[in-house]
Length: 210
Length: 251
Figure (cartoon, rainbow over the protein chains, first blue to last red):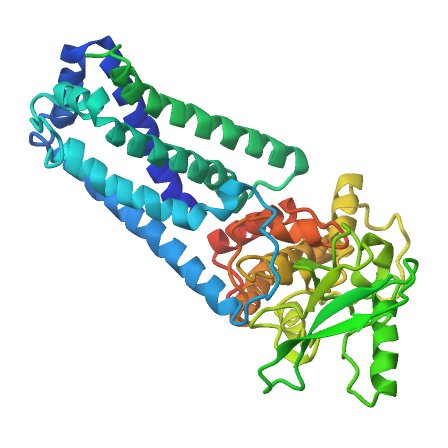
């Protein structure tokens, strides 16, 4: 859970930083997208680096979902008779929404790939002009796309808050002051990443990026 | 105080079980929760009914025998308190109180509120001991222990094995108990020879007993009557990682 999660987190950070290129202009953003395909050339043929990365992410994602499913199945079998009176779990909201939050994020990733990678659900859908795709996607009249995107990113933020804290614990964080630091760090990281992702659609919505 | 109790009644391991409602009157707020159940049981006995079976022993919060889900809280609403040390003043007059046994596959119900916690003994048998002959109490300065280690080991050794952590865990995991029992030995010199075989043996026994996996939800530490901290599980994790990296221990 922790190791596969951390691989996915590394990708999320890189993806978020790449998105911010949109603020330096359409040309820069399109050039960045093109560069991702050139990365590794001439050692690798054109576009291969991106496919290697996609392959690695898919493996990490499969491992993450497999481990989560195992945990959920074990949890279910560990308590065959449910409590008649059960208080809401007292742990953080993030901790008790990990499983459904994960499902929401997975559905979003599928939509997101069909939208901005393959272009099937995008009004422009031109792979050579990613900046135009993004601007068309979050246009004010398509507010529902921005809303769904925002909900998914907030779900991701909660998932990361408990996920990052829990991963540090799984990898051996073991002191009281370390626990406080891990909690603070996880919260800061989750908020920073969510904000980093959300500034792009809102900048388009408010007309700051066209 | 007059209260309405809804108690899980189950005649034996094979019975399906059900919640049964009992009104109780004239309860003193200074009674403990178990004394309140004693009053109910006396009345049930006088009326020729079967009294409610529940586990208890020392009634001073140190033996780990008692334990029940009270209104959805393991050991009731007061933090850091076993059911026997919980007083009726924590409840309000006229309240309805739901009382259920610990719910876990590894803790099958024996009768009413009594569960079989042999699974915890299985975890201890998986490595929760030292094989060094320790003899009588040694001279205190013979084996120096750093103060911080002694304190952390003692904190873990406070675990009374009541099972509240399992009962409260959304995953039905016994990892706080296992971590406490690993840590109380792994921090002391006497526990070093078997340190890495112990952690693997105990985690394997934990999983074999049918407990769920830990997701760091943190429910266990909230209800633990001895306040075993959640980062104890981090100590177990670190020993487990070191043990698997060394490829030792799996028998």
